[in-house]
Image (cartoon, rainbow, N blue to C red; front, side, top):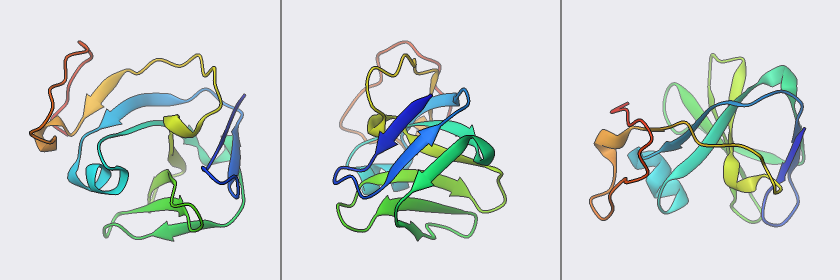
Length: 124
């Protein structure tokens, strides 16, 4: 089981399943919202329990982003039609025991850094 929270603690969550798709997203929206990149994992809706007042922002016609309205922590990303949710790896209590699998949306990455960790890189 993994536990996570926002910076101020108003939102907490627990994951009871094995996360998948552990990735670093370099898309423009994630870079703008987080200030750099966003590391996340994916979990089925049935395997996550969220407590607290998540504010949802419709970032596009197909997906929304969940954050804490008090401290601003960006915690979740969800396709409108999905039965799973992406969650912030950085918001998990340590140790996580998790390992990143890949980089996504590298075609959209910032021009101020290089990706040099050897993980697979996907344009989308």
